[in-house]
Amino acid sequence: MRIAVISSEAVPYSKTGGLADVSGALPKALRRIGNDAFLITPLYLQTSGEHLWKLAIDDLLVEWRGRQYPAKVFYSEANGSPTFLIDAPEYLHRDSIYGYTEDHERFAFFNMAALALIRRLGKPVDIVHLNDWHCGFAAVKIAHLRFWDPFWRNTRTVFSIHNLAYQGAFGSGELWKLGFGSEFEQNHFAFEGHASALKGGLSASDMLSTVSRRYGFEIQSSENGYGLDWLLRARSDRLFGITNGVDYEVWNPETDPDIPANYSPADLSGKLECKKALLEQFSLPVDLDKPVFGVITRLTAQKGIELIQHSAAELINSGAYLIALGSGDKQYESFLQQLKNAAPGQVGVYIGYNEKLSHQIEAGADMFLMPSKFEPCGLNQMYSLRYGTVPIVRAVGGLDDTVVNFDRVNGTGNGFKFSRFDPSELAEKMYEALFAYADPEVWQAIQRNGMAEDNSWESAAGKYVELYRRTLQR
Ligand code: ADP
Ligand code: GLC
Image (cartoon, rainbow, N blue to C red; front, side, top):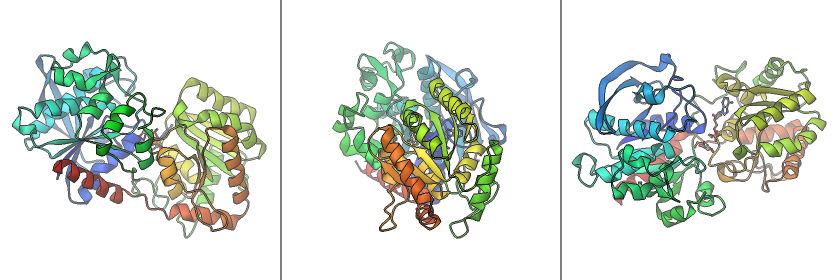
């Protein structure tokens, strides 16, 4: 099968969150199981030059606002699959990847450029795999082009929802300008009096997927549907949940070059060295008997930071350490700073984005906190499992699908899981974890259960191929 994966971010070229991990790894995994998959993603200011192997096309002409807009395309295989990076500085070179009022226009352009590129490559694709609202434009355009353009006639689209909360809304009056003048196209975008790129993708794509089974159900309820649950229910026969995989070439304590000592389930001693180095790095007193809670996250309401905030006193009183890496909403950043000021010998905080440090926290922490309000899939809990860092999570979305609550009697389970969005429930699970931690034999059993989980991309990629097949058969 020939598959074009299109994404607004992909490791190692750009990243703000898990979407990048997934988009970088999936095409590689699809190729490994025999498909002709390639990736199309933007070239940002943030894309490191070391990944730009060569200029592939210097005169890509994109139909854009009534003229042929010239863009360049670079080629790389730094993520393990052929990757085309669209270079259009006017739209894509900014201080940050997202966050501009004209984001809809920037990504509409990126989508049109991606389609121009596929055509320029000359060979029609079977599947265009689109991700999140930034790719909704391509879904609508392909659905329209298929009516009259033989190049696209047999191409089918799969749209993956990584996060329904981000919708790419803009004024419907803009649609003309962006090249969506037909009633057919405008109807796909129409949502509550404005245009929504996400709605366009959900409405026009041939098949829908989301990144865990449970999230697939959750978004069909009005509580979690962000006004689009009716559409997801109406199209539920085309909506499938496929849990993300983990790229164990990147996230593996046995080989990770970013951590001070490598380790495996058979010999966990390196993990203690990682813990020591982590505490030193944050200038915390080194008491290896005390557990370290780790947090790595975008600091947004989605991630349940307020539960950590309201159970922080319990954590501090227990004598444990907390080491947090994140950036985002100012209120959560200042909460973490304040906590550090209040308990300087127990709390380490790094506000910002730091890839290497994220590996070091995964390796050096004993427990990982992820009490999300909602979580389509979540990757850090799966990284934590592999690193022997026991996840404490709320039972939502992919967290519920991947973390099994530890059962002391049977010795089963790989973490700790609570249900209600309530700080006292999180505190209770933290105490339960601390109690288990106090018995090294019990603790190592939980760690080894987690490290033995196989969340590799091989199985997830196989499920996508199955979904693509079904899509082509419909
Ligand atoms: P989301 O995509 O909602 O942010 P995921 O758990 O799917 O959540 O993925 C988050 C990804 O981003 C992980 O790879 C995590 O390590 C990374 N990440 C989040 N915040 C930071 C940060 N401040 N520094 C480095 N990596 C981060
Ligand atoms: C989104 C979700 C996260 C998921 C990631 C990759 O950012 O918030 O839960 O793991 O996409 O699919």
